Length: 158
Image (cartoon, rainbow, N blue to C red; front, top):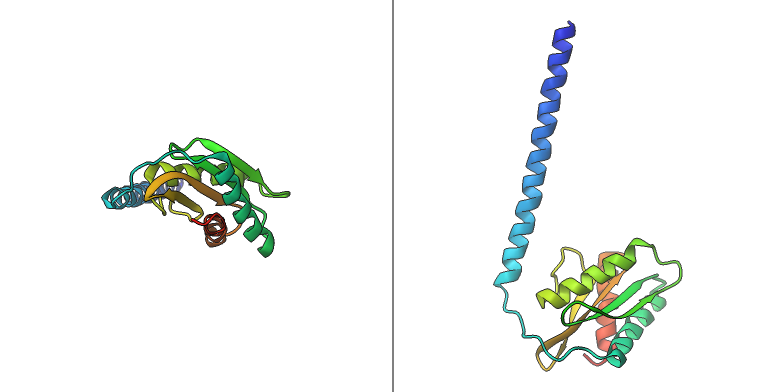
């Protein structure tokens, strides 16, 4: 009986390992397909880097949308290379949102397209058909983050 019990545990352990390996494979495949899809899209060229005044205007628009809806957000604006230009965090915003907002903005700027991450809230900032930077917003649901980011661009006339 003891040998059977050990044997059963070994089989269960092997099955769990196979399931975990399959899960890792599927996750890797999904990211690969996402990257290939992103690479296949036409990307606009980089333009002149965003200035501080415009970055503040965009962030103010995102913050206004967030305040209107009672969302506590972290808002980042980066230049066209993904480097931080402006950052704002509302009181009582969850700690993790700070890094997530920056990552969303960096991805949108460096890949030069919306949807560069599997979660919403990062949008490139366009001027004259060129990417001059990006906004990243995090703190609520992904679609709410995207709504606040889009409101920031709209407030700045973009």
